[in-house]
Image (cartoon, rainbow, N blue to C red; front, top):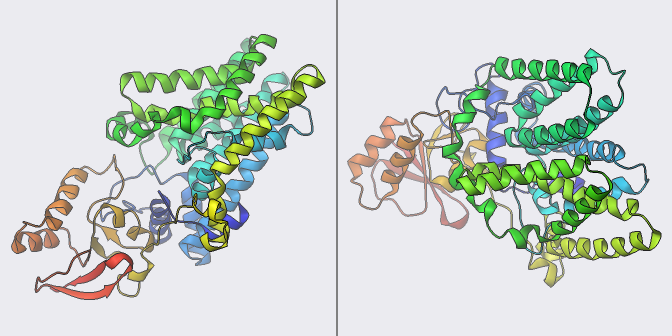
Length: 466
């Protein structure tokens, strides 16, 4: 993963996070929309990204170097967080190492990647995302909460600190915040704390809610009404479940064994809460609730790993370790293409190279001409990358719940690139949105467009001649 951070393969939402750092670098107090030239708030302006934006502003490092620093910090938090949390579940010295293997390899025979999910391939592509940082904080949060519930002497300061950490996780990555909340609820239920402890936890919860309300960069509670815009994107989370997560059933079996030993086992309760939210999302059509799936996967993966060191007789532990090892080996082979993010396809054996997916090329070829703050007319795919270098696009490449004219902007882009749109209508759209450049994949004959450069895949950069 350290070598992956050096290479920083580009896929998914990396451009969004780079654009967020770009805006904060130029204006920490009033960054505006990260993707389009509009003064709207954005949930991407989290405390973590604000800090990275300040680092970029102070050091003059490139945005991608700052993201590498963020990736290194997120990975360190994740490693130490898993170690601390697993130590609350088992004192065996091999437990943390087995837990790491379970979290990154115990998935299924079908490759799956999504931010907030800890598969090795997914982690390689999202290591610079706030979701990894928030997951690392979540493991620390669960470890801290577990120890504070076991130690009745924990005072008000320690409990209130939990509220601050909970709010920080939710602000940094809202979906991971839901997972962290479900894990915390399971931990509290399993501990069955007394009245005094519950009072202090209630105060911590209240403090966290106040901090969420006070965050100045966006209205956190307005996100509760934004689910309708996210359902279609998250529907794939409910597809191919057996292929993507089939080996996690080994963890479900391990959870059953843990439940037989302890009816209040925190991992069992954690799994049940996560599975309940995930199932409710599928049954009701709220597919964005599928982002709570790590709340079911993480406890199952941890349980499968821990059973190899906590089962009763030695023969049982040995047998379980053999089954677990076989599942981990298949999971590793499924994700073997991840090696290509470090070595490159040409250095891989043919069988492994077939599993490798080429990262996105990027749009750095525009930067000699397109400057910070210029507006570029581009389709959805390039719009997910171009703002990373400083320009804006007409329509955001990702759903934006705080941009009131997002639908109109998307429609304008479709009209601009439609084959039957009259030249004057295209020029009117360019004027309306102050378009300075156009990125297209066809030869343009409009006299007000001047070809400037050609990029990968036959893409062409045009300057709008005023």
